[in-house]
Image (cartoon, rainbow, N blue to C red; front, side, top):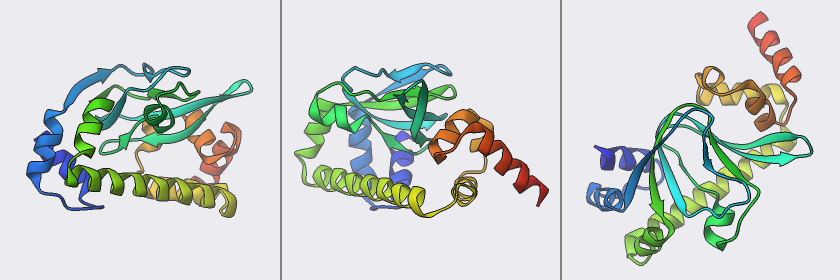
Length: 191
């Protein structure tokens, strides 16, 4: 079942055989986190890549006296503090569970084991490429779209997010204040 979930999540990028995901799953270990629990602490080295089975989480970084949400993760997302995981150095990024979370963790050692296989190299290359493209699109959207448009797109992609993730983190992810998000939400409900 876990292998099928992994496959289904990645098939939008590349349709690898189920057997590959069955092998991938054997290299992972399940983990659970309570709501608001830290998955990866700021200032620490990340040693795992993760796949989110249930719940939601986010990547947070402190700026002045506020935590800024740089990424939001939901079921079917692969994530890690890549800066830390691949350099082996601490980073200021914290990854926190926004809800109770069930995930699969794969150690850096097992990632390296997979990357030594042709299909593993391909899957990680595709995953890296997709992550880069998504992050670049997020940056372009921040510079070229209004907050209202970005919020509408977020809702279109996953309408339940507003019920699952604290509003202050949705606002910071959109690059606006919680008060601005409230105005946008009020305006959208009036229309």
